[in-house]
Length: 254
Ligand code: ADP
Ligand code: MG
Image (cartoon, rainbow, N blue to C red; front, side):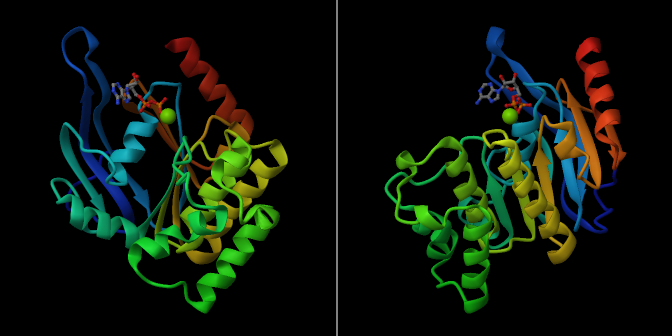
């Protein structure tokens, strides 16, 4: 999909001609190669592609966690390319939730404090509504009996669920989730998906989720495929079977 930099309609985030190069010389990797795309407001968007195709790099740059080598990135109407770290941090805190592949929990904080961290960082106490939302997230994620545990006392799946609860606690406009169900058993994985789908359907939040799972992606409004740092397909909702077939054709073609 090519979009004009002036077309800002209903885009929660967008990037234009994004290139990201890691390393130099023999170790040079072109992780993103002229990627232009927008995440539509209120959509649940799945991002798929083989390992190393640039999915995490794209999510990090879109969320303002990493800089592009060239190209432009916007969150809503705000261009984040070249923004100062401080401005970016403030923008991210108020608008963006991120579930990392590697959880990024604070090891010295217990579960309750990790979930409440976005409020702590923003220097405000959760409102009554936010507290109810957190209670619901804790219950849905099955973390009620773990609130006083530290991350190292939890399984990988439990840590992942804490990270998800934290990303949704402030009900941000925009949520990036990098393989959020990768460490979860299938039942918890389904609950996480349902939670993300509900966040977009009921609260109008824009969700961009990296996944390898065709069943997970079949719940999305739209599926974007990356291959070798480029967008190889961008399609509306598909069945899990169609998504699997496309993934297979890409792997074979690679
Ligand atoms: P994906 O999430 O699709 O598996 P990534 O975005 O993590 O892919 O990586 C894309 C490419 O960029 C890969 O070849 C990876 O090895 C490389 N890469 C990612 N991060 C770094 C980094 N910090 N330094 C060097 N190379 C990196
Ligand atoms: Mg990745």
